[in-house]
Image (cartoon, rainbow, N blue to C red; front, top):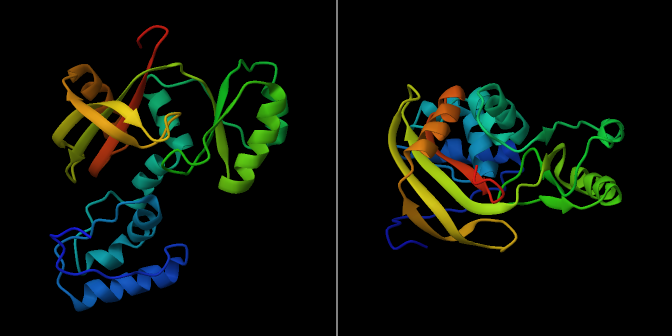
Length: 230
């Protein structure tokens, strides 16, 4: 609906991957487009999976799927962060209910369940007891698939490093922003932010993105622990 759009089209539901990809391949084959910018996981993933096909006709400004998958999957992202000494909540990489029973004696509440693959806070839920954890974990897994369990970080500032990386995984632009309001209030996409200066945060974010061999746009999000300001 932007006044700058010269044309619009309605594509097939990306859940039907073959139909979606075939439709868009036909569009970029018949028309001259300099670049294609998918902007949600549901469209980014199938386009990047078929990057070689699209790249014959236009530019796909993303890393290959092997790199993208490490950022789409929270479990893989966190493992890269842990390997590179980037601070993150303590995380349990649980695969099934049996493993949940094995670690129940180690758990301290509250805890957060997060689907490994989701966006916009979908499927993220908090638990305050072992009973809640078991029932809610099953519910989240049934709806969203494999999930991780994390310690809950009491909310201080929420900060984001927005960056652009070239095809050599080198930074070309950056902005750091503090979240002021979100929807819903409990956690979700931001509705008001302010730009701040934080070279220390940029350093941490760039360390993660380079470890991922990232290409294109990225946003690395941080929550400041209100207990110790880390």
